[in-house]
Image (cartoon, rainbow, N blue to C red; front, side, top):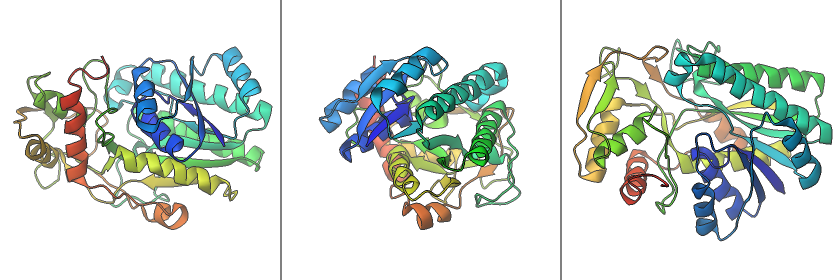
Length: 336
């Protein structure tokens, strides 16, 4: 099978390319490199011994996208491309809606033109907003608290409407919790532009000496130590979930959401202490005010993915922090 991976040079995309290539899929990546590096794909080739095709373009470039679909003969699409930071989305919401929603609309139109109707969509647990209880199931109400989450929910609703209009589509909506970690080789990992928006790369950059101190956003949540609790999932487990979702689409399930998480929550300070143990480095931090749009506790009930995709997360917190440290210590400046 030939799979188009949008945003495939990014953090989760590159790890998914590793798993796809290792499983024998043919892979083409489209990425505008706005928040990723082409070097990641070169390293994907080193790891797998196979090279994905690469097209540098924005999904909203419809002429390029139409030509790509017309010429390449794809069987399915795994869709990662989009902006992804909660805090940034509050600052520049229009950019998030234009990029995330606009790119998906262009992608679906291009797919429809050539009759490709299998799509794995990179959604997010932020669609649930501040849940009334945990663990979170797929049938919980959706009410995102920030523009990033709303952009993901808007796309989910668009894809539901698309399916209602044409039930030959098969779509998996993968609601990620908090991806962390890196490939066990240390060759690919998370390399954000500028100041990291997510916890783990910030911790890693403090530990390696690239940044002086971690900022912890709030210590007055109703949690064990006052800091926010999240379901952290190793990026390799997450990548494998995409292969399971692709396999599931062959059974014509229609449109189905799946939580991809571990079912266990860790606080910010628990993650800091685990990283200090793995790295042998101190991670000094300052407590600052809460970020707009953040919630106290969020972790998954991954039972549906286990039952229907035959997928579970195998790697725990020790592997998450160990692999993150291996990547950061071997690549203190990322791919540069």
